[in-house]
Length: 92
Image (cartoon, rainbow, N blue to C red; front, side):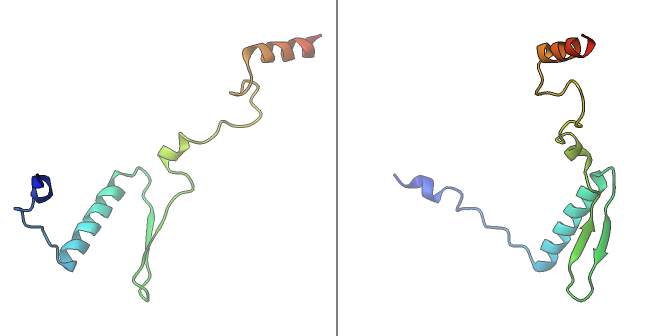
């Protein structure tokens, strides 16, 4: 009845050493940086040992999520009828 509790217990858990864990993390970080079209600058603080990435203001994938520029006559919240009516009142 409780066989589902013991499934997968026959495999031993893989335990990483701190060196293996750190090497894996650095390798994954390098792969992620390699995939970026704009490379960040990297700073290492020797006192704290912290790594800081200085990224551009907007990443390429974030540019797709930005709102449309303001001041456009055909913004998404205006219907075609409203644009036509506004144009007619300006002409008349």
